[in-house]
Image 1 (cartoon, rainbow, N blue to C red):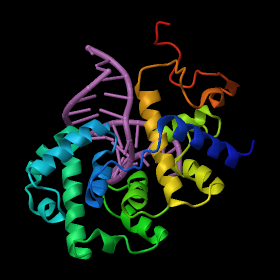
Image 2 (image 1 turned 180 degrees about the vertical axis):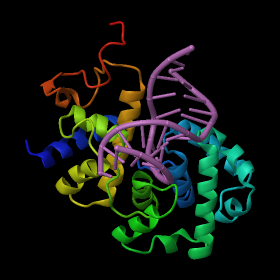
Image 3 (image 1 turned 30 degrees about the vertical axis):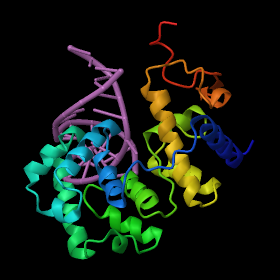
Image 4 (image 1 turned 135 degrees about the horizontal axis):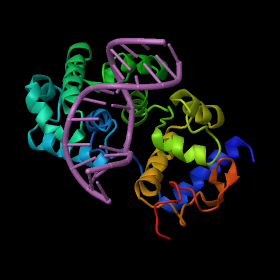
Length: 235
DNA sequence: ACCCAGGGCGTTG
DNA sequence: CAACGCCATGGG
């Protein structure tokens, strides 16, 4: 089976077992962007807490974020781990949008994907994954977002090395799939959803894993053992 | 008590 | 450019 067919087969299996997710979990484009920054290296649950705090204190706008005292902002997003860094970067970002883009994300999102990506990467606190998430889920332009879950899932399937770089991962999808906004959005959503069930759940033996026989380990087919090391579960 | 979540940045070699 | 230290919460 060629790579393209395998990628589509995996997508179908995830979609069939988990159902369409219609990501990103947010009530507005603004929330997508803020959430993308806040979720860096932290569980989404912690981000929800932070977003709730921001809503409660009426901080869901660039104007508000630009003028709030930074320590106060840091306190509201304390649950997202690197709260001082994130508060500084969030505020800097908010001010950039106000000054350079008339406070409108749609102005930032105007350029084509390569140019938009460049501009996002120039912003402190926005790296590759965050930039791509913003492009895909906020700007609604097709680019494939990859992450730690992608590396784990697809190295187990044998399509990536366990130490694959971000570019290597992104190329796998970009080179074998047709550029399609909905497919890219839903596929990444499925990978994360799968990761949260399979990887976060401390269940090494994942008998109900939809990827089943596609999961390998060290080049060998390992059947239903597609999750973590088969050591920590009693039986 | 210990592990690790949907990273990114600045600094080194 | 890869490797490393840093940032520094909360749930299992």
